[in-house]
Amino acid sequence: MDRVLHKYRTDTPFTEALITDGKVFLATAHQLNDPFECTLQDISHAWQEEHTTKAMQAALAGFAHSFGQNIEPGRRFFGLNNSKAKAAVEEIFAAGDLEASYVAMRAFIKKRTGKPPSDCRTTLRKIDEQLTETGIFSLSADPAQPLMWAHYGGEHRGLSFSFRPLPGSRLADPDHCLPVTYSDDLPVMEGDGLQVAVTISLSPSGAPVSTQRVAFTDKTFQRIVTTKSTDWAYEQEYRYIEPFGGLCDWPGELAECTFGLRCPDERREHYIDLLEAHVPNPVLLFEMRAQTGTSRLERVPMDRVATKPKPAAKPIIESNEAHEIPTAQFVARLQQLLQQQNYGEVIFQADENLKSHPDDPIMLDMKAIAHGLAQEHDVAYALYQRISELYPEAPSGWYGMSCALQAMDQLDRCVELLERAYNLDPSDPSFSLNLGAHLINDPERRAEGLDYLRKAKRLGHRRAQRMIDDAERAHGTGT
Image 1: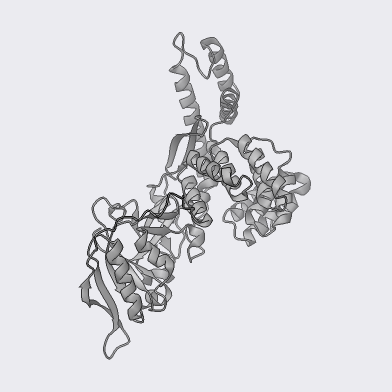
Image 2: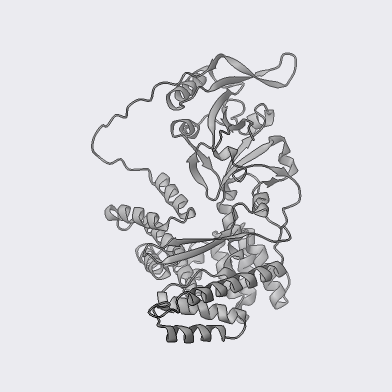
C-alpha cells in the first residue's frame, strides 16, 4: 500500500506532542468508541477441546524429546541422573489419561525448578485479554470527510496529519497496517481455529518462561481487530496495530498537514513552526475550504505550499540533575514493557523508583504484576501482602494476593481475599468475575457465584457471559 493515510486531531497539547516527541498513541479496545471493538463470536467448545488436547500432546512430546536428548552417560535431566530421570518420566506417562500425564509433568517441573511451565489449558481464557491489549492507531483514507472533521477534528477547528508508508515502515507492513472491514456480524473463527505462538523468555531470576499467545499474524485475530459496524463505514479506516498499546514511533513519514475550516490563523502558524522544528522532511500544507455555492468541503494546498525544516538544535544541558518523568507517563511506560513481556526491566525500573519512595503503592503493584507474569508468584504474593498491610483500604493488595495464591494452586483463602477486595470496590468487574468463578464451584454458593458473574457482565466484563453460559451448561441452571 502506497497511499497516504490521515489522522484527524483536535488542537490539544497531546496533538502538539505527536509532533515534538515523534510518537503516536495506540489505544486499546477499552479506549475505542465502539463497544463491539475486538469481539469474536463464541469459540466452539469442540474447537477448544481439540486445541487443548493437541497442545497437551505437544507439550508432553516436547518433554519426552528433551528427556531423550539427556540420557547420555554423565548428563542430567532436571538435576536427576539417568535412572531416576527415567523412573520419573515413566511415572508421568503412566499417570492415566492425557490430562493426568500433563498435570503430572507440570508438577514434576515445578518440583524440580520451583516454577511450573505455563498452562496451555488457559490459553483460550486469555484471548480476550490479548485482544484488549492490542494497540490500535486509527487512520482514514479520506482527508476531507465532514463528519470526521466534526467528530475528531475539533468541530473543524483542529487539523490532520498524513503519514506516508515508506519502505520498511509499519504502514508498509501488511501485518501492521490493515484496512477495516465493515460488517454488522461479529467475526467468526476460521475452520482451523487460531494459530498459537509460543515465546520463550527468561524470568528476572534467570529461569525460562514460556508464554502462549494467539499469533499476531493469525487471520482470524486480524479480522477481530479490524472489524467494525457498517455504521462507521464513512470513516474509510485503516489501522496501524501492535501487540501492545501506548506510545510508538511514527508508523511512516509525516508527509502532510491539513488545517480545518475553522482553525485559527495563529494556531496554524504555531503548528507550522512545530513541524519545521521537529520534522526533518518538508511537510506539504493544506487547508479545508467550503466549495463556493455548495455545502461541501474541499482540501486545497495552502499559499505556503510546504514547511522548510530547520537544522536540529543542539540540546541545552542546564544541570547535572536528573529530571523526573511524570508518574502517569512512567506508569504508562512500565505497562507497555509488561505488554512486551519485558518483566525484568519493569522490576528494575520499579526497584529504582522504590529506593526513594519505598512505600509507593503504584510501584509496588507494578513490581508485583511483573513478578506474577514472570511466574514468580510467591514473590508477587509477598509484594501484594505488603500493599495490603500498608494500605488496607486499597483493594489491589487483597485482589493481587488472591491471584497469586490461585496461580500457586493454593485456593483456600482466595474467596476470602476476593470478598475483601469486592467489599472495598464493588464497581470493579474483575472482582465480581473472579469471585463468581470461585463460588460456582461450591455447590452451597453456586447461585451466589452466578449472581457475581451476572454483575460482572453488567459492569462490562468481556468474559462474563461466556462464563455464565459455561456454568449454566455444566450445572443445568438457567437465567
